[in-house]
Image (cartoon, rainbow, N blue to C red; front, side, top):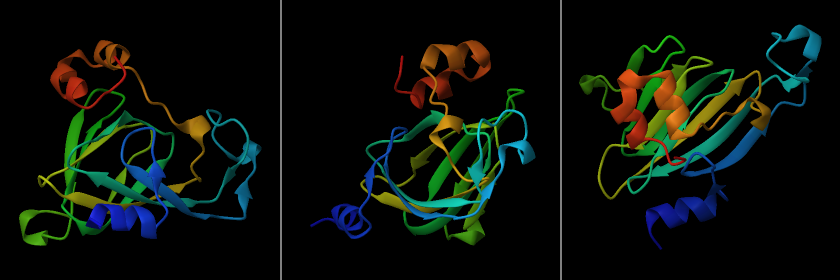
Length: 168
């Protein structure tokens, strides 16, 4: 059994719509009532949620966004690169890993409402990370755009968007 198969089995990971594999590991029992959340939220949200996320070098995490900040935590394998585009079209990137002398960080926060994608950097490897979201993740807050709509919004990032989208 490969290390990837071992991780999928051990942590009971399932395919994620954006690519890769995941398993929710925490969902707070407490919730924030709808009236206490910003107006773009519909319904209440748990205080916080957390998942394991596994990405392999033969795929990618497609551009998507959520309303909340998302904290990425590095655990094992290859460093992972995040590609981010703000609502204003500003591009940034960050490598999450454990080679601190090369500028990698073990934790990174993707700001809410930023479009982002991810890729495992080393060939024939995997990236095993965790993601924490607060207020808690809800698929109602998840947007997985098609390529054309994202390119129309950010034409200056056409090549990057084409590389990291699946829905044409």
